[in-house]
Length: 356
Image (tube, rainbow, N blue to C red; front, side):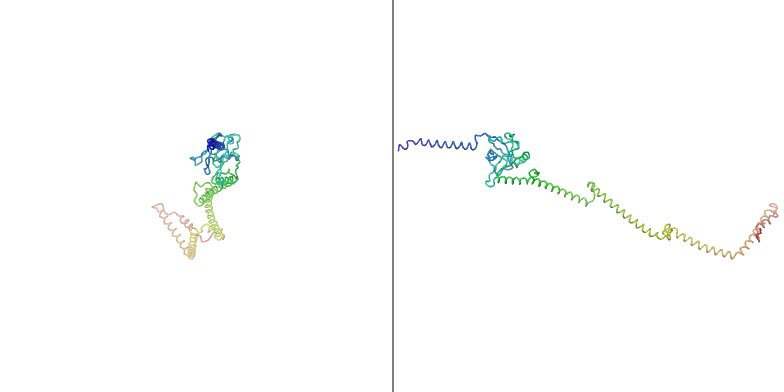
């Protein structure tokens, strides 16, 4: 029995040494695998959300793990500020305008982050520079600046494209995301323009259905002037119709020339025709009476002639008497002789007409 336990201490020491050696080798392997002793460079990034994101999430480039997520937190803009590390061997892969792309595998439900280099392959980013995720606003700016090729496994690429497509559907002014979104952008702008046009059309129709105001513009002022001209034309047309009707009536009235002068001078026969008719009637009656009087004078002409002769004789005697009185001796010297015979013979009517 003593022989059997003679080398026990050595045997235990051997196994302890082996276990310690295995532990050291394991730690070395883990350190090598985790690149604990490799120099690392830190950069910053932005994510829209932290879905599928965790510390130690690897950064993949062309299938190689070149770094990992170091930390992340939610900022005041509701974005995810994160820091990631890049191993020294891949330091020069972080060039300007580079972006990250986060994808979630729907089968394994694991997220992976891919590095997508920018177009400037020779300009290396400084440490702590920003390398945004492509779905963020900054990431889209970097995509537009560089000609970037996106590559990944088929499932992740499809899911990423679907997610990006859905994200772009919820954004505005994204015409640079492809022909589909450019079409949708122009269709949306066209629909907005049509809506504005419809509003303007409704306003125009409303303005057409109300009275004109000074602020309606040139078109409605022109239409208002056209309406005013139309009213004046209508009034003018009524006046023309009245004039034409009056002209037709006048033509009908004066087509018959009988009594035209009378109708022109005195249409109502009140001022000239009737008074003249009355005067003529009175003259006619007077002429009838004068005619009767003349006929009476003609029937009484012998008596009238004797009366006239007696009257002349009486007047001659009266004249002589007056002359006698005038020539009275008491007055002047009596009646002159020879004067009475001359005056009497001058006033007597000759019985016969002297012959030549």
